Image (cartoon, rainbow, N blue to C red; front, side, top):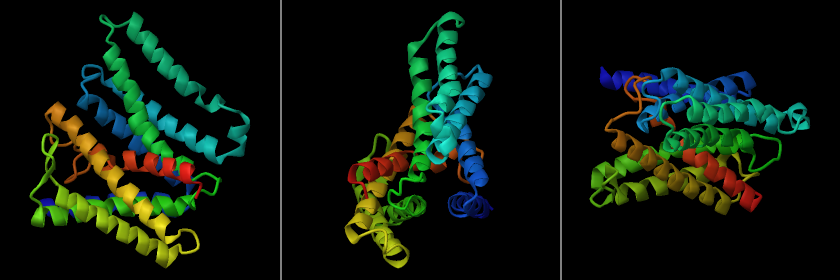
Length: 278
């Protein structure tokens, strides 16, 4: 029964994300990714020990992250919003400023580390997902929608390859203090599988966009960033003493458990596209 639930809900998650990426519907794209940003922050804050007794603040922080995604998407893809300059970000910046002032003057004890953790969560979750919007703008970098498709497929292939190889022959622990089950053998297996799959996707569908070395480099960046993203979230969960970030996806844990790699991969690919101008 557990395997059945895991398969069904895992398939629904994959279908929802791929649909948001490939169907060309802005409404679906925004709805899916804003929801991921909202739930991701709501799961992140308990992991780092902030707002545990103030659930409303966590909800507001989640809404702020969702708005950040909307603002970045609108600014990157709408000429009208670009004409307004940075005005679309004003509500978000106002909320961050309000949060800091509220903490200083209203809370019984001002804790700068909590403010820092909250700000980091906005960058980590909201900013990490917003990188997708910058990759889907009109600049023509990498054929953005294809790169996003390749990124998500690459992440899933990396996870699968690392699991199969690691569970079969893995002996040397990658970071035992953070994730005891991950091995160097699994990392190499996931790395090779991801590079091969990105090359295959590019040569079969996108040979007019990506050269061989570009496809291999994209695969390498996806694999390394995905692994670090997974390890980072594992560190957060280990410090919090929990197995999963949440229970919203039956058989899979929380949303943050599903997007931990994405939050590192998308910014890494954005940096790659900007640096290499491909």
